[in-house]
Length: 202
Figure: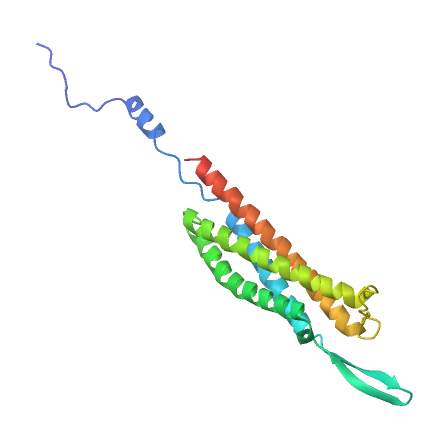
């Protein structure tokens, strides 16, 4: 009587569908963590330089009051509340960027990448600071424009023809803060893109 071997292993083809049915790995954002870190480094650099340029914008000039009589009058960023607001907004953003840059760098070294919860917090606070920095940039830019051109309707005289170094510093600081606002906008777009791709794969 012929005997059958019941201990033989099943063919390898039967195991192949099990391997194919394994769930795909979780999406980690691709190159987005690298871009996120690079943008945050750029944001920190622009905010820090803008603060330094604005704080060092003091200039003193001799203003003639009468023939043979002139008094020294300084121009400081503390004289304009809009410039103080800009320095405060950039300072908060700079400190925030240090923290988020470290967190983003740690997420870059993690195999799973940046978590959805952390990415959502990035999006929320980046959008908040975008509004603050953009508002401060607009306010400081308006004051700087009046200093450059004046306003004949309100009787505000221009001062940049006298305080040229002060105006150059303030204009450079406003320009750098504008770059910071654009960088924050790019970070918000990046977070939205990453969150959308993560939710689309579920």
